[in-house]
Image (tube, rainbow, N blue to C red):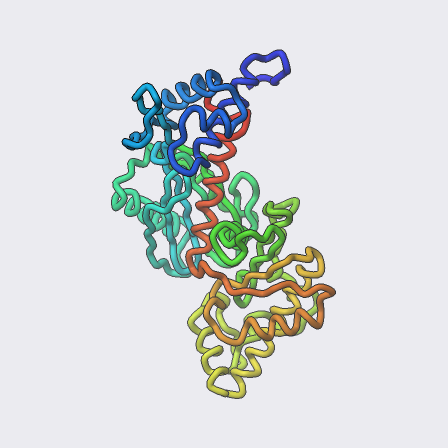
Length: 384
């Protein structure tokens, strides 16, 4: 599209369309044209013309009118609604142990979910094929045609570049250097947005979880090699190359013990992706087993140092802990106490409210953000 100027008559039409569409979707109940004119601060004839265009585009429809809504002449006032069913959004999690997907309408209302286990040793092709099977199952169950998808968000481990290329990933075999966005776009006729899993989870907690209403927050995806996603001023902070929050690499700064040895009770390193083994160590520590208790103390001490580095740099209001640590006792209180020791202004610390659904939910939020930008900005407004 060419450069917009003040002399371009389409500019005002695009602004009006975006403003009216936003007011229509945000309305509490189907509004009349007069209601929309008041909300959009536009004239009624202008709003009427925009709504006609939105109806033609399939984004608005006339709503049923109740018997109590009658003008003095006896004719019911026309009311309109945003057609959230005009398209669909998809959020996909591709992880070490499972692939999951969530489907929603254009308002982000969840319509269904699906998931399948996957081996941590699966190849990249096998993992992608499992993701395609989960999506096909979900669309079939919800009776939603693939052609109605308007955007797809994907959450994946690793450092993810803007075009969906995975620059580095130690968690999944064959994932480093994988053009993940390009591979997945072959399966969809809509934009595919790929994001780091911890970043996606941070978006999810801000949208529907423990960080709702908190614009400066850090989400810690806990594990032997933890990662983190952060929001600053309500916006995701990815960093210059998408590597912001990779606190799992801090052990490279001259520390003696690798993450795999921290929770070991036998002297043999744990496998970084063996969540069951990690959970067993925490369970034994709760039962008072001495070697397990010492291992958990080592782990918490390292986790606190990693999180404290982010807290000192970003000064968040809230730290949300998720990942396999969700539901494991003994993590939050020591984390709170130690952050009080290390940080100038300790943040609140909370457990994830979304649990294992955080990454797929955040991927869905990516898709929703894309569609909202498309619909509600001047560049993407329907009236052209």
